[in-house]
Each structure stands twice: as C-alpha cells, then as structure tokens.
Image (cartoon, one colour):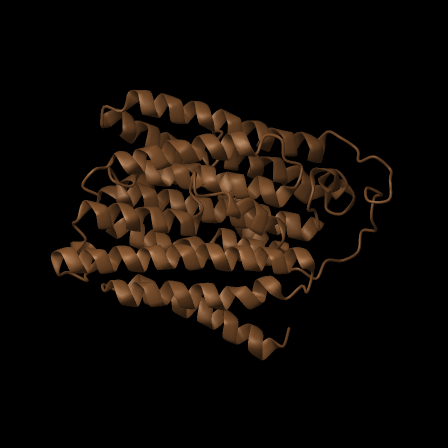
Length: 348
C-alpha cells in the first residue's frame, strides 16, 4: 500500500477515536465511530484475498448495524427526554439499546459471532489493530452510560466470559483463539463497569498490553495456527522460552501481570455481595486458561510434524521492530509487583 495512503488511513483511525473520546454529544460520538470504521476497511481489504474481502464485508455490515442502532438509541433518548448529551441518557429503552449497540461493536457475547470470522480473514497486523485500538472508542462511550437496571451488564459480562472460554477450546487457528480471548476479557471489563469504572480502565490497559505482545509474537514467528507455533523454536529460541509466560499471563496466573485485574475484579464483586457471580466468573477463567495452556504445550513441548507446512524454516533475520515486543513482553511478565501503586491510583 502507498505510504501516503497508509498514513492517511492511520491518522483517520486516530482522529475517529479522538473525536469519540472528546465528544459529549451523541451525534459527534457517532461520527467518530463511523470515521473509525471507514478508515480500517481499506487496511482490512488490502490483501486482495477472498477471505480478506469477506472479512471486510462482514465487519462493515456489523459495524454499520451497531452504528445505526446507536444512532436510533440516541435519537430515541432525545425524542423522549430532550437530551443529546451522552451523560444525560436516562431513558431505560434508549440506554439498553445503546449498550447492546456498543456490545455489538466491540464483540461482547452473545453479539460476538462476527469477531472470530472477521479476525480469521485478516493478517496479524490488522488483526492487532482490530483487537486493541478499535475497542477504545466504543468503550469510552460504555463508560459514560449508566444504566438504570445494571442486570444487563452482569448478564453480558458472564455470557462473554463463558462463551469466550468455551468457544476457544476446540480452535486450532491462533486468530480465532485470540478473538475468543478478546470476548472473554471484555466480559470481565463489562462485569465490573458499573461498580468500579477505574478498575475497568485498568483491566482494559492490561488487556491491550497482553494482546499486543501476543500478536507481535505470532507476527515475528509468522504463525497462524497451533501447528506453526511448534516450529517457532527454530526461529527465535529466547522468545519461545518467554512466550509461555505471556500466554499464562493472558490466562491470569500469578505471579504474572494478567493476574492483577482478575484478582481485583473478584475482590470488588465480593465486596458488592455478588460472591456467586465472582465464583462463576473465576470458573469460566479456567476454560480460557486451558486453551492458553494448549498453546504453551504446542509451542514448547512438541515438535511439529515434518510435513510441507510444518518443516522447520530458515532462521532469517526478521525485519520487524523488536523494541515494542521486548517492552510489552517485560510489562506482561513483570508488572504484578506494581499492584499497590495501581490500587493507590485507582482510589485517587
């Protein structure tokens, strides 16, 4: 792709998200989401492959549906209450519609079915943008909506953690596994959203660091399936040693960084007298942990079958920048001791 066009598209992506961040009016927020969607479509379709075109079409239709529902919800709220301000959305019907529209845009269960299919059709770089940057703008709006009946957020959260764990169990494609992982993590965030918005932001930040490092590892190894992971020892032995720690951090095992948000969320749910929901959520985390362990096992303890797709490749020098990967990997593994600092910042 022409570098000028690429720069324009990436700047438009940033502009769309920034407009949504800065807006207090529903129409402006909707406009930011639309700019965001339209900017990423050429990046998704640049491969000129039938799967990429199919993924782009599915993504466009899904996002257009979400945006139309959001516009309908905000218009309904303005019609019923006379308010276009995001923080003034008070009518239960409009609030529920807006939450469902934003859930569709980020890929929360049961509105998640487009995400694995779309992510599977993309290359790893665009998949990384879709799994991280594209979640920010809808989440900024979700943080500002306070539903009158909080049950809908709890239902969405538990469904997402359950479906995200269950769906990834029988997958062999890494991008589909990351899609289900994304749904599960978003479920944790939505679950705690109404009780502690700052904790949701901390979980989102942790998710962005963990997901970015995982995608960059897959990109460096050029791995798209579990079988291809088994050849990574020949390309980057040191990275292959560290990657299980990244994956187990995604699963939320101590003493890694991924344990911090899960621990704090379970603690907060228990404080809110929601111990049964906290128990159920903790059990669904075990499902996700299983497929991360599968990836760890495939990467470090197995040798790939010596067929055409699994032959050990040449150890050629990679052109990928390794500084972002190194920084994110260290953050993923070593940031748990900063938990007291994070807690202090959350209570400010």
